[in-house]
Image (cartoon, rainbow, N blue to C red):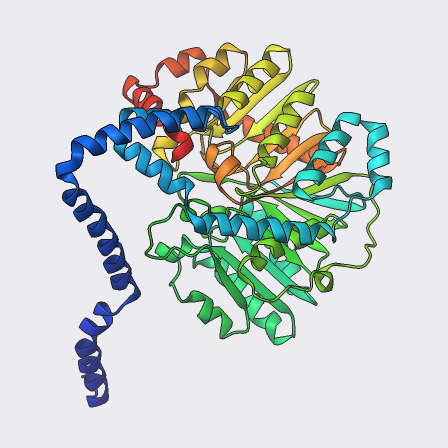
Length: 522
């Protein structure tokens, strides 16, 4: 039997339920979006009697835009997608193009990032002695570093040690240990945060560290607020003293700004230790729950001078909507006790600076390879230049191996990936699919001396639209561990030969070909 107090509480809850639903954030969001769609619809109805004139005007404007697009310096893949959309659907295509290109909000954010980037450059000058040593070892690597320092303001470091984790669950155990030992501050930036064993374990440590006086800052992408976390979750964390922000929160206003997501995975502890890789804070990444078979991911831990790059990388996104200037220097370590001759360059990529440093880094590794380039990536959606580069490197005699998932998390993306298989196989590229499950790791390894690991997928979204991060390494002993992991994963994978690829259904290939036309715009 329920007590009278319990019965009264139940009646109160039932009585208030319609009001809470009516005035909930979800209801208001649906209402706001409905109003915007209604305005567009009734506007179209109102102008319907002028449709012939509007269609003719849109066609002429479309042709003008096509000429304009062709004369821009944008990636040809994007240009082709826009041109097809405008020519096939003149009115709709023109409207969408102008809507995407003329948004003031996106322009203001890009200007804000430009300002922050210039501020951070002061705190990360390139050490000339390190660069001079690198020039004597390999001038091509030194030229790549100069480019990165010029366009993205990130520097290459020595006196940094690294530890490679071939699975998320292995990295997770060490991460918990490092978090418990934090003394000054903890920064966390993730694309996905989901309640479960992994996040709960991290959260309990964060709560305790705050009590000990440790500063904790948390940044996660706004898409988490849809299905993974409540919209007011930052307030919940702040009750425990954890400073939390939602990056680019999705609000009920139609905008292309939401196309630019924070896909980074970063942990920084005391300015001395940093983590990055493909692992998010969700249970599938440590194989505690199963999604798409076994989840193959990886992560890397840095200790030493290169951690400075990740401190500034985190503060870049944290600072974007701050009214007061951050004291960058207060979070930067003064000295490092680490001694190492390895070269480590942490870098971030954002969609507003017009420089695709993630793609440039991949090009650098491909074009300077002498013996092999081994690539692990969950997605394969290539622009013309990347496709030709991979093929030409393979045709020159360099061994190029692509290691992809066999169990896909997104069927449409998997179908698109297969549209490249024929051209790649013809050029001598070897393709393998990880049969136990899903590969989520993003890694390039070359010649036992160069490697990249981070959040950058081999697709348009990562290379052009998202905020990403990664680490470039040269002559680091950890590279051998990464190659060893690649070979181990390869032994559990199926090679995709001509015969195997022929069995891929025509329906899936057709769907992939259609989607590939508009891949840059998705």
